[in-house]
Length: 320
Length: 246
Image (cartoon, rainbow over all chains, first blue to last red):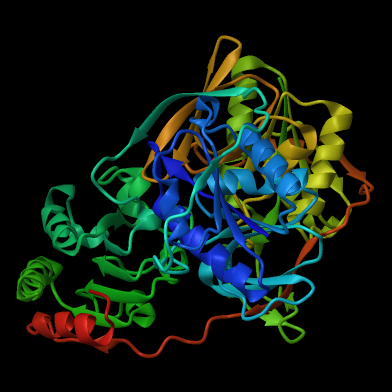
């Protein structure tokens, strides 16, 4: 059985939970086992995980699990995994998933692999999974030779599809260890999709010349339903907030479409974005190294090209 | 405050990544190695700042062969008081975590720092494993930490934002960008590092349960399709019809 940690936020399942459950169900199908989702803390819409492949949804709704404490969540997941005899425990490769992964592995005496990036073609005696490393500059197969495997799923690995019907949600009441940490405050940018979950990212660099010029980037992002990002020098000089910084020392992302505007493409920047499915580069310098990593490119003045691009996409969208 | 920082060694960020023995091992030829930036710039420096604020000691621990002593000496030059090198090839996160946890159990630390991940394997596993082995609280992706009475308030990065967490020692923390500012070792630091204790210890037995068996590099990207700056509509058509990205 594959146990999936279905992440929730503000009482709803997250996109990463749909991806993890869908991936978990496909993994389970390889050897005829089943995928069980586990939700911790108050949440109202767990039933829909059934449509994405969960045979069963377990829900520990205790208020004590509402805020995140690594030890508490890891201990509850491990206890449920043991009780149900899970062979694989799957987390999303999110901030909380990453935080839980190593500890849960220790508690289950399990081999751990983070950032699994594709569905194995078949299952043998040992689970063998693929992952990216060196910030996307290489890939590796990992073999897990313990009875139980604990893995995390890289974002945007699989597009979750609702193929089944709602599942019934089973309330469970596991023993909840006292948390030794306390969440005092959570601050999130509202209204935008967080970068690691974004399907389209519009990113800009020093070529923008001044932070006051960002309007054209934001307009392009808006018509595309994209999340904005930036290069390291832009974040370091305070033009844009640090949580927008993508690259090797910022956030590594792998959206379906990455549009880089006025970014030269230093190797450290490429490392964080080169797993994007389609890369578009707009730069006035034809020698910018980013063009070598791009699928499509325009050599031109971004102040001219970007507003035109926004207009053309508007036309496309209105043509339906 | 008795502080421990686990440091690892990685290829520098601009290194050419290649593999040898038919993809079974990393090819280190021509590669410069550095202290993992998350360990050096953020974890180690924040530990030093904490020592300056509250008093105490900063110890670094590293798993690796004698050739890596140069990385450990750099940590001592930046300001760590002493160091331990566990004489073992760090071939899995679990094996490393076992070594650090065994050392910490014996010595007793108030706070254990790691980087949020290494820039080579990007595993982000060691910190949580150490915390699990020691049954200590774990706070990942810490970008800020302030002391408040006998407690600490740690800010950690989450998707699209951050959260503040109150915690008491002992605990394990993984350092993200922003936790501290990089420090360059000065001549006095470099000289004094030579006489600081670097203890070499034998590993405890630990078995890797997950191993990287085969490495590949991505195939070279096909050449970029350039679109004329006067034909932005053509780019939109390609993205829509060919790439199906919009």
